[in-house]
Image 1: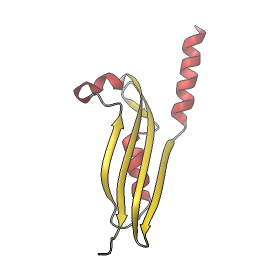
Image 2 (image 1 turned 90 degrees about the vertical axis):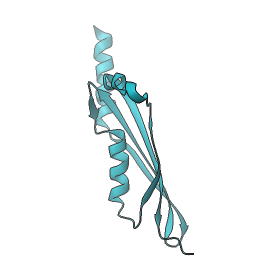
Image 3 (image 1 turned 60 degrees about the horizontal axis):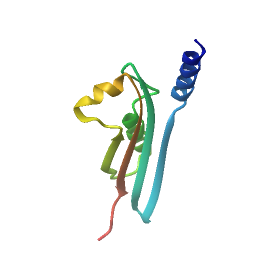
Length: 105
């Protein structure tokens, strides 16, 4: 009986903390690259605190830099048509990469 309680406590602690990062790299005075990540725990189709990709996209959007373009988006794990299996209990990691600003030619 003690093991399920410990597992539930660990799950609640990891779900309560928001795990997202945002990193900007400047290439020129007015442009550069960004990398945003998000982590989420899914339990019975509910993401805690929110979906991993949603966290990453919200962080990029909140930066308010001009001309932001996402060039790569990845969510791990991804089982394609069998993602419903991950809705029972899983940990998901999302990574967005892209550019921002205006490149002078």
